[in-house]
Length: 98
Image 1 (spheres, rainbow, N blue to C red):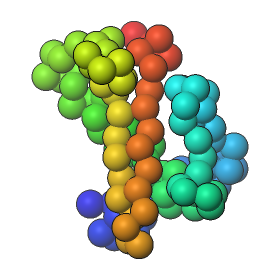
Image 2 (image 1 turned 90 degrees about the horizontal axis):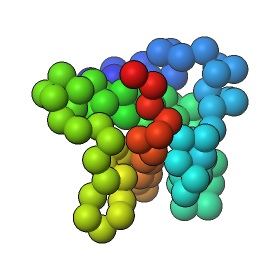
Image 3 (image 1 turned 30 degrees about the vertical axis):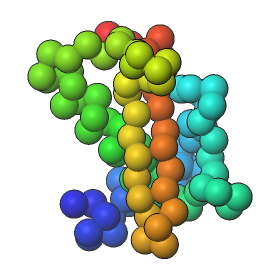
């Protein structure tokens, strides 16, 4: 919905988006798509999608600390951008505060 109206970058303060590091929440995350840096709207889109995933799983009483059998973190999101680039970001369960 936010992407449809192109309002992602207005959801967060510009300085917040410039200083946001996905690596802080999972060591293998980066602030890049392929070899280029993420734009503010892409960062905001990923943050909003991660928040939505956490909210949905919490309200459906799913285990937020669960790790998949292949070792990947379950709290993740994949966002496909307009030029078919995509970014996958994960949150380590130990970074969640209850």
